[in-house]
Image (cartoon, rainbow, N blue to C red; front, top):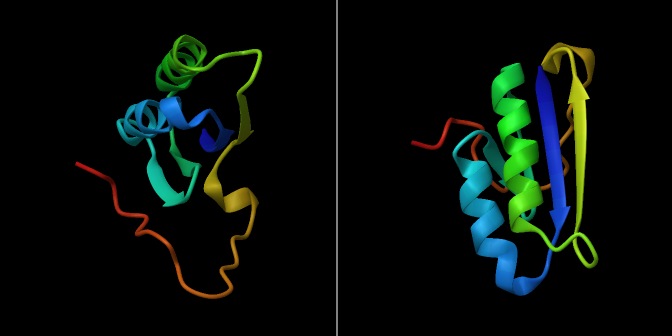
Length: 87
């Protein structure tokens, strides 16, 4: 599956959630990650997010599709980050 994850979390949790998501997805803009995931990776991400965030303050939105081919991405202006996998 292809996923886009967008988050708005407290400053004290930004680095932690960013580093966690970099293990699975490509960073594309501030607080935005996307990429292909297996079902087990997707479940691990959801559990990891629940452990990191404060559910009373923070917000995370997860969009999933069957594949990247089902939508079109158009960038206006500069591309913030490469879609190459982070190693």
